[in-house]
Length: 393
Ligand SMILES: *Cc1c(COP(=O)(O)O)cnc(C)c1O
Image (tube, helix red, strand yellow):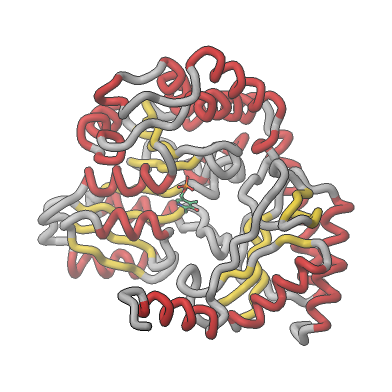
């Protein structure tokens, strides 16, 4: 029988035929090094829980207390129904942590990106974006009427050429880059990009989703890592990765936050993060500010695992961070690899198009401070066996 959804059936079948159909597994335990997935206890190598904070007792305790005091829901959007003192406390903690004047909390990193980009530029303006920037940046740019220019990956010289040619007529210019690129784990050449921004009087914004809790002193992020304090106009971050909870934020000058509170549509038209989430985030930020032990452990684990993978003969592309792409090329091979890993007790997802380019499918391994060397040895053993079995090594 014909149905108006036949086109959906066709599209889904195409995804399945090309190995791009996304199998979403069910988790039945708290986050941690080992989790229960679809009934099996497996080593977790695919969460962004870099520091193990997602199930940290102190964060959980703060969330429970916040529920007792503030309940579970924010009531409405902050600009209409008022904001809780908790949200303001988180924003103060984030601003102090990042060493900037002010910060503004959003419901997610995606909401922070799309709300901010669409507020800062519009008709007559121009956005300059790295070709491998995160989808939330791409979507934010699409929501504006600004002209969009994509520069080659990590290429400050390429950016300068485009600015030279296309930037002259723009009213405002906004350069945007991921700090750490989320699928490859390489870093933006931020010092060079900042120089270009200053030369062309462009605003510069960095998405630090995978940088905070990872790079810089006590995990303060990529701006701190490169010593570029006060030279990056807009820092965006998420609370859902190293901080272990959920939510997003923008950090920078007071006047920028004042403007976003008035105009950012994700701030004005969507309710805030819930009180227990915010309370847990505050503890996470304070914890990181007071100790860098977990950040050190994360890097120690990362070095250990990457060294093991390289000596097995795997191609880890250009990763400079705990994001460890195990390059396989073909999407179907990546799917089978992931499936075999799972059967051997490892949860590590295959990533293919459209998240990465067609011929750049991979297993993306995320290292965490929560892993022990014993866990990582187990992983190396399984990767070696499966790699040989599938003819990758
Ligand atoms: C995860 C991620 C986001 C989105 O953050 P959420 O809080 O999950 O919405 C934005 N940018 C980058 C680079 C990311 O990796």
